[in-house]
Image 1: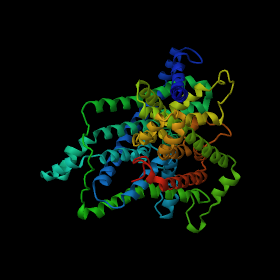
Image 2: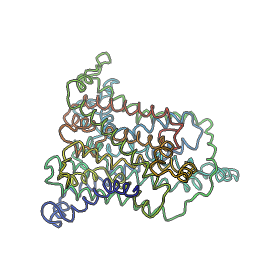
Image 3: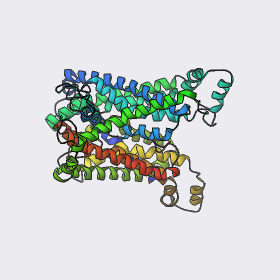
Image 4: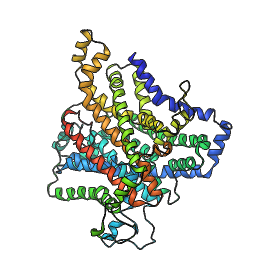
Length: 554
């Protein structure tokens, strides 16, 4: 019964939307498959957007890997101080929505920047913001996903065998030689995996290209899909389905490349010893710590300072006077702009509901994957990973196609309602609760559960009274990650929202598109405060969690 229930959930959330997406290619709603393919693939905008996606995706991945790998090597292998604080601060940009990151950087540069005006360095009025360019998109993709590479590489570095490093050092090898010949080869799988995940994230990112690319008429595939849907609605669903499959193919190419490179060599580590002792930096430690502090200043403090100043000014472009800063913009969005409070309620409700649903599903699903391995569990695991591994725009299009008509038999219409966003959130973010749950299962002794089984306790009783209390901390931490990720999400909701079902991400995007940067900044600041507050709150029970469940926990 459990297998059937879990399989049904996976079928609904993962397999069915993807199957509906593929069916649209075979039997489009209008015309023939050949006509639809010809129309979509013969358009010059398709290939321009595809090239732009590849360009920003590859370059953004390279920048993110350089930033993330360098910082991971420094933090993990040296005796720098304050690494816990650095990890917490450096991970924040990854958990802040991309559109908030883009908006914060936009308010830091350009002729209207309140921060540059405050320090007397603003360029002349009429000057173009340098971030409205492919280079700006690449820069912010690197900033956004550098922490992702950092976390994956750092996890691998913490598993390095101490004896190999110490033996090489004892044999007279320099630290650089040890890094080049031992450490980097051993963490190669993590580097390859991080690059693949970052590439998929860059290609599927909507917020940064939307804020920086649309004003410059530089479209990538997600923004091209958005513009087509915004302009023609369901009439172009078949065409945007083909575009979303193009994105999927690009993302899958990155995943296939990762698998190919990983199989070329055997990277297994057969020891379980402690990680190596940190390398002493000596007189260079102060300089390295200053560099890490400068990085946090550049990627977090200054952009958020610019965002906060913009949220407190009365008019964009005026000289900033600290005594004239006001909270009036916050008052407007909270009391006079009806959509903003509704968006906060919607986003909090959707995020909380998606987290609760994922927690309820992750416990039995994790039980099957971790403790009842068979030919079906691997397929279930891969199926549940699919909606998260592919770009969010692909899942959004699949959800639109799946629920464009009322649900058969039930006759319920969820298209153009908030429920379609909830469905997409549950499908996309379920894996964020499943991964830590599986880790929790792997660290639990099965003796208690087996004893209860021998005593005659049924599976549901064991899940409720024994298993869930043991894995609850890890599972609930995964639920917190879902809440943080979904709170100001934009990629999915930008294509699925309707009047009355706005989310925080949609409101920020709408304000910025309408030229109301001060209001967009005010909403963004509130979401950043909520995100950081929840990160700090989860640290209160971090000691009860398996290692690695909270990515910002040192």
